[in-house]
Image (cartoon, rainbow, N blue to C red; front, side, top):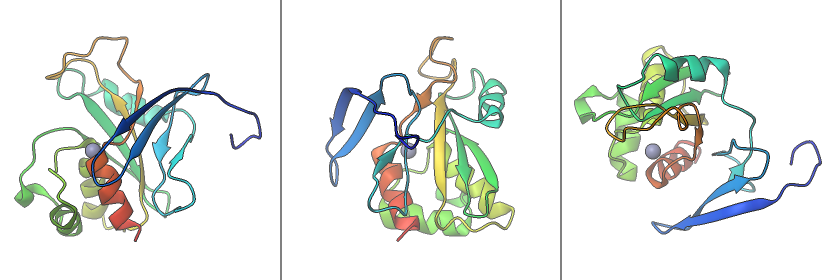
Length: 164
Ligand SMILES: [Zn+2]
């Protein structure tokens, strides 16, 4: 861990897509996300979801299954929920990244990237943290609300592209 303490990987799930991606659940530390732009570190524990992200999740109960906070390299944060989107609804650079990487465009991270780009912030080098949201089509209960969620394989590829 960053603070020098040891941690134990208690569960490893592997998804096969373009390459293996590991979803790690670490005992005592329940937040993790993929850090694009650091080729030496694919998966990294990065602290708890921010209060702003949790408040954003609260504000979207029953409207989605996932809320995402995307942080630009300048430190500005953008927010988005998981929802069906057409290419026309995406901001230009996000649309290009979606088209090149084959992303379906529906993830909360995509909404967060569009939020940043629409406000004039660069999305190059951005990182993201996501949490589950109560309700929505998956019908998550309170036990899942606000729980950290690993980036999906599509987003891993897209964020790697944005960091290339
Ligand atoms: Zn995704």
